[in-house]
Length: 134
Image (cartoon, rainbow, N blue to C red; front, side, top):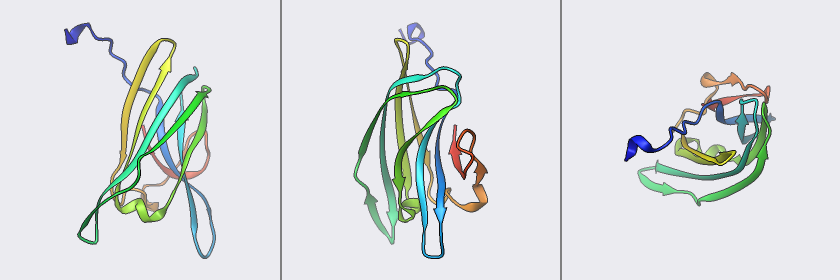
């Protein structure tokens, strides 16, 4: 049975946390979906949530849902702003999308303390500093 299912492996799609702006008082961070494919992806659904332990207590954030009709090839879309206070938690993004009639899905998890300057790269397509999961 399982051998009959199609292998819809997610490739060339990334979730990135980018440092948008900073000043002396604060830093502004955004989460983006980056389509590194040359073809568009459609009917994109993303759920996001944070969870983990903070100050010895279990913490969960609200689950947010985002719908993006189309992300063109070699392009990106803003998912949501993210608060630095959640960087000590697991930040999970569950992505589903279509290419033609085939559906793809993948879970991306930024582990606690992984969104730090030491892990920054120049994000492709965005050309901003940040952390990315492929």
